[in-house]
Length: 326
Image (cartoon, rainbow, N blue to C red; front, side, top):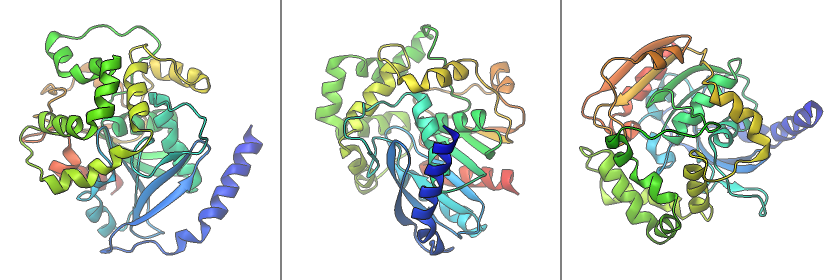
């Protein structure tokens, strides 16, 4: 197994060796690229110096790489190499095997981050993300402490226990998660298939009620929801997390590890939007949150911000990363 992995990493490294010589420099726009991992051809955008310390920025549902357009420039200016991949099921990212099941359990998107870093030959990197991307960042940091130098988690520690049956939350929380229960029905699958742009736009509006985005802003990202795997990936993600869909057998052991809420060793900052329409954060840090980190540098609740913090207040994200990497 290790021999095969080394062979893959060597082949991937040769494939990107030439491309890495001419990255977008500070002040220039990002370069659109792609790289192959064992499961995916991951499309990503890259900016900054090839010699800069790498930072991987991870978007959530329903969003894409455009979420970090305001976050990347200060990081590039500080000399970092910024990498913004499209998650599985979004934008130009594709499954390599046409017959592979379109699954997106938390272990899969977490492993995608590590596979992405492997393909780019990154021994160490920092991560930041929100929603699905925040969970993927947390998984990479928790399970690979030797690889992740720093983590900014928007929404906090969101690794889930998918092994034990999930318990109902308070009525208000259940109400806010209506879309998840909708996606656990065949009507919800059909609704996402038929109305994906309108539905996702509604989520933007309700999750970030004080953010007034333009049609142009939304349409630039909504094109990523036309990915042929988008519906299957989204449906599987929301069904698997409450036990209504099977996971990939190769992730069984990994999901068991995640069920134990592994601690994140890397210096971390958690960020919360005070007006997040999915989950309003408590003012004080709860004990479970503090227990999830070996080095929680700061916990910040940002006023006037909803769910899409990288878009609504990008400086909160970039400054947190720069603080950890100083």
